[in-house]
Amino acid sequence: MSAADLHTLTGAYALHALPEDERLTFERHLDACEACAQEVRELSATAARLGLAVSTTAPPGLRDRVLREITTVRQEPPARGRTGVAGAPPGRAGRWSTYALAACVAAAAAFGGVAVWQNQVAQDARQEADRAQEQNEQLARVLAAPDARTGSGALDDGARGAVVVSRSENQAVFLASGLARPPGGKVYQLWFNDDGTMRSAGLMNPSATDDAVLLDGPVDGASGMGITVEPAGGSEQPTSAPVALMDFPGA
Image 1 (spheres, rainbow, N blue to C red):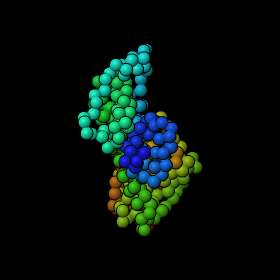
Image 2 (cartoon, one colour):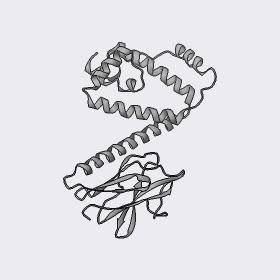
Image 3 (cartoon, one colour):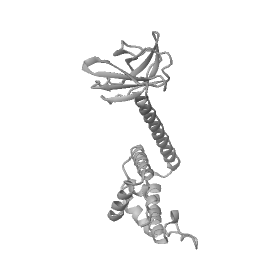
Image 4 (cartoon, rainbow, N blue to C red):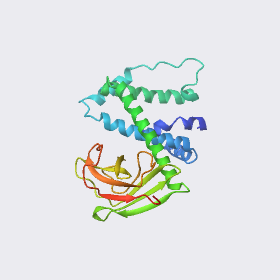
């Protein structure tokens, strides 16, 4: 199997569709190819989201009907002189085209009429992954900034919190440990303290008890931050007593 072949197997690997020998070969390739490793992670996440989005109970007899139709649908032969998918040899292209045909028939039988919607879900998942990656990279830049300063304090119920501020990045990161989950239908909301005026800095994951969150928005002249419990979706202004108020280090 050539290196060019290996680069085309990310989708099949993410869907657990490789034979055992090819899976082992491809996993060795992943150790040395960060581009393929990243693509596998993204494809796996998207496949999981799609599976959850369209999960349904298949109608009786679906499997038998799909397998029967596969045997009667004739595959169109490739144009003469072409090598197949992504330059793969004709034998490999034919084999993977057969797998693709089976997948398409199954999808059409089970989820006919939702292909466009599924594509939109996949695009949304990719965009969400890109946003998450961008946020993680920015969070890392704040933590590693030469002028990063850290302050810490106690939260309710023995939880601990810390805030890291970088004036050069003009951003801050909040880190929580042992934080109790908010009541049902509620969420922790973060706030910048602009000389007594609270400015929303985003929401925390309600299911996370240990978390690192990039505050949403620039630090600008904020002297500290606060945390309140708000209705799901957040509030324009705090509606409850603060769980914690913390001054920014050096402010």
